[in-house]
Image 1: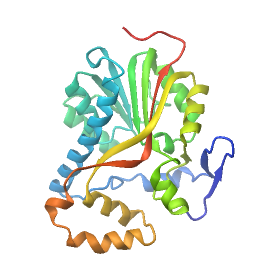
Image 2: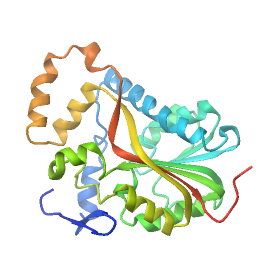
Image 3: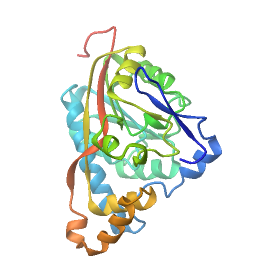
Image 4: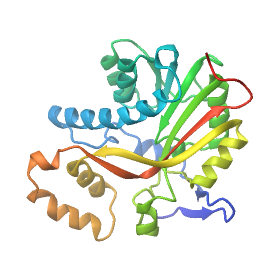
Length: 276
C-alpha cells in the first residue's frame, strides 16, 4: 500500500491506515467494476450463485439467533442482493443499504421491490429500533469511523436485536502465513481487526453476548484467480496465473467451502431482553 502507513495498537492489535486515503481515492476504487467475476452474463450468474452460497452460511447463523418469520433484517453493503434474497426465502422481512447505485438497482430488480436504498446508514433516514437483525459482511473495514458506525447500528436495532459482522481477521491463517503480504491489505480497507479488538469495540458500543469465530466462504478457483490478479501478491499471484489456464472449467467454477481470511462476530444489543 504505497503512501499509506499501517499503524497498530499494541494493546488490542487493531491496525489502521494513517493517514487514510481521501474520498477521491476511494471513489475511484468503488467503481461499477469493483465487483470481481467477469462482465459476461454467464460470469455474472456464476458470481451470483457463489455469493448466494456464502450468503446462505450467514443467514443460517442468524437464523440460529433470531426467528426469521418475526424479524426485520437490514443488510449493510448488500451489493447485488444475493444475501437478501437468501434471507427473504428463509422468511426474513428484508431491507438493504448500498453505496453503489448500480449495485442497488440490481438488488432491487432481484428482490422485485425497492427494498435497497443508496447511501450509508449514517446519512439515510432509517427508523430507530426497527430491525431485529443487522448483517454487515466485509463492510466495517471500509468505514472511516467504526465506533460511530456501530453506535448507529445499535440505534437501529430493537431491544435485544442481533448484529452479525464479517471482516478480515488479523488472527486468520492467511494473515499469519502472509504477514505484510496479506492480500487483505488494500487501500480501501481502513481498519483491520483481531478477535480482541472487535470484541472490545462492540463492548464499548453497547453490545453483549459477543461471539467471535473464524468465518468461512464459498469460493471458486476462478474467483480466487481473478482476486489475486487484481490484488497482486508476490509469488502467489504469478503462480495462480500460470496454473489457472490448465484447470478445466468444471473444476475452476466448482464451489469450495473454505476457511476464509476473516472473522464472524455476533453480538446482541445490550441493556434489553431478547425480542419476542
